[in-house]
Amino acid sequence: MKKKTIQSPDAPQAIGTYSQAIRVNGGDTVYLSGQIGLNPSSMQMVAGIEGQIQQVLSNLKAVATASGGSLSDIVKLNVYLTDLSNFEKVNTAMASYFDKPYPARAAIGVAALPRGALVEMDAVMVLPG
Image (cartoon, rainbow, N blue to C red; front, side, top):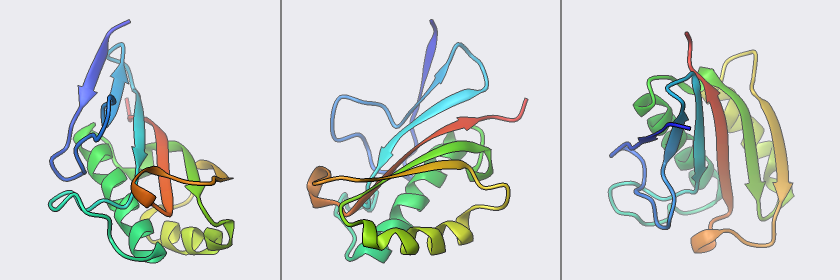
């Protein structure tokens, strides 16, 4: 299997042993790693759940763009929340970043996320081909 690493300076650099995204076998499928609400220039967490949701979506957008696609090419989105009562805030923010048809999605409640994040999202993208 051939893998191509995707990196964007407009998204936070990896803080562990992972890549921002991987494109497999020179094909159309790109796997985007989880993004949390880190500001890519300061590598600091933005404040509040709404700010973090916006930053996560901006980070995903940057990685999607670096992959040769856009958020509209995301076919599957996983959302991890430390408080599922914030789910409606995710829906509201997604409406400003995604167009119909929206990606398939899962929302998962978790006990904790890296760096004390309140939200994390990862995705699978299929590039137009």
